[in-house]
Amino acid sequence: MRGSSLKDKVVVITGASSGIGRACALRFAGEGAAVVLAARRREALEEVAEEVRSHGGTALVVPTDVRDEAAVEALARAATERLGGLDCWVNDAAVSLFGRFEEAPPDVFRAVLETNLFGYIHGARAALPRFREQGRGVLINVSSVVGVVPQPMTTAYTTSKFAIRGFTLSLRQELRGSGIEVCSLLPASIDTPLFQHAANYTGLPPRPLSPIVPVEDVAEAVVALARRPRREVVVGRSGQVLLQLHRLAPGLTEALLGRQVPREHFQHERTAAPTEGNVLAPVPRWTGASGGWRESARRRRATRALAAAGAAFVAWRVARRAWAA
Image (tube, rainbow, N blue to C red; front, side, top):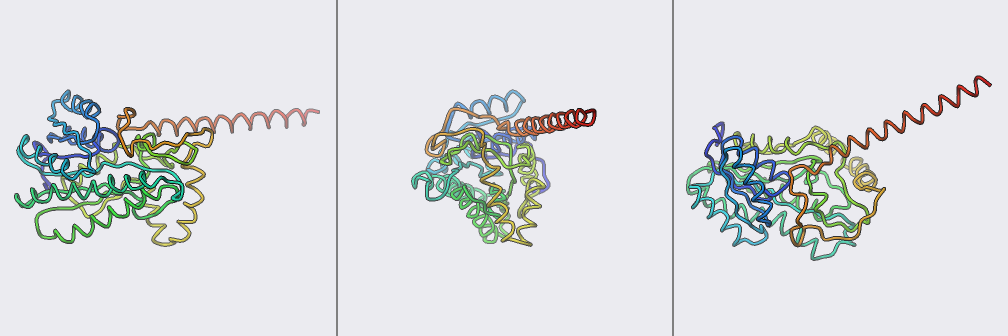
């Protein structure tokens, strides 16, 4: 699809029920593509499909657990048989786990890797034979900035994103000259419901690190890759800066993140009971593209600014009285 219109192209998107996947589905549909929506919850997928169709787009709902290789193969087969082809496959399905490695239940840790890494491997195995048959196709793997720059408290997620990036780059080398493009996307801190859905064993609710990038920016980057494939794209200026800093001073960068993550990646004013989140099974909440975190961050900034202004006013009144006395 290099440099071409996306109209009537068939695009499979895993993790399409919420977050980045949902935003991608709506953006691809807006470009005229037919979108195949895959995730575990049919009800959530039907919501996305209804929105796509209400804007005149074409959507096919295929409930899929990407941990199941046979189910992913069936997803690819449904795309080709019912929509007539397969032009682009977006591997996006992801779950996360917050907690120290030694406190993370082994089955939950393993399930993160099975979804985030093997889900992508299953997607590639399903898409590549169909791409080879037609001599073209675009595979887009959504990794993360933490797939290059590690952070604590998310060892399973970080491990999976490092592995996804390595898998993508190695696969790209194998497919050079085949007409098949393999792209890696590295989002920074994004406003999605991933944090509400995550397994969590820290005692505190997680939240994205600031600055928070709109989920629509990631969807725009994915669509741009489908139209004009590139080796690797970072989404978010903060992510680009972090990668540069890590290249120049890896030890310093990791030390800074080691302090920042426990302090800022969690809501210290609240508590949270241990939960496996949506890692082992889907949860019926937060199906939107956005997690509402940018608005929450704006409110926090406004509250801090108001508190600072109030403290300054009180200090001014005290100083004025002291001067008058």
